[in-house]
Amino acid sequence: MLKLILNADDFGLNKSVTEGIIESFEKGLLTSTTIMMNTDYSDKAINYLKNNNLSSGIHLNLNFGKPISSHNNLTHKSIFFRNVYYLIHLIKNNKINLNEIEKEFNLQLEKAFDNNLKITHIDSHKHIHMYIPIFKIIEKLAKKFKIKKIRISKDYDFFNNFKNEIKNNDYYFQWYIQLKYFSGAYKSNYFETYNKFLWFFKAGNVNYNLLENFIKNNSNKNEVVEIMFHPGFNSEDLRSKSSLTIERENELHLLKSKKLNNLIKKYNVKIIDFNKKIK
Image (cartoon, rainbow, N blue to C red; front, top):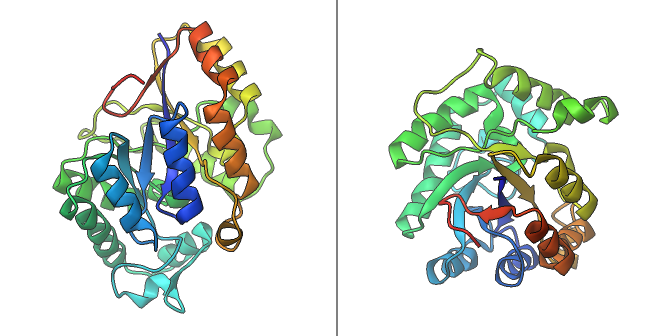
């Protein structure tokens, strides 16, 4: 039986995204989210998680907003570098000390645990944790905080569609992830079996047709697959902070749609969270 984890990234990014994720959970099929700990709306998101049954991991972040730590090498004018590949470039060229990244991530995790959040798993903004030097930091901190699930952004459908993808930095980063993880080049003995993952290239653009085709072709498989969503309400504030605006609202409507709910029932797919609670 196919089991799907419908996870919303960016909880706490701003008011309209946070409210959109809440609505996707309360009125739709969303089962899980990952919270950002360094944003202006983090505290509101934390309060919601404390008082509601929404399963949440942590969305570790080096690419949006201000750091919790005081390390200026991670920032430009006190703001994180938005471009994940520029950040990787700086790390490769020893312009950023990995100890600074470890301290920042440790503070983000400490904030979650100081607020008594039950963190189910780790992922990151722009998948920065997939870069091996940073992933090693994640492993260390995950052991410290006793978290045994980490998103591996190794796209389930990559080799079915990679010829159609634009040959940009995202494309080559996905190749890197495909080659490094589970190819023998890098393995971990600490974590539980990783869930499979969809869709690296479809951030903010998951639609009904994609889901229908995937479910039709895979409904008989005994697998757990995480699908990454970015639901939210479009807003003026969001347009100043993110390239995903109306796309988020489209995903919100999809998660609430009767059409998607009927599709899930038709193929007897189970919608679960990272703790395997069925919605």
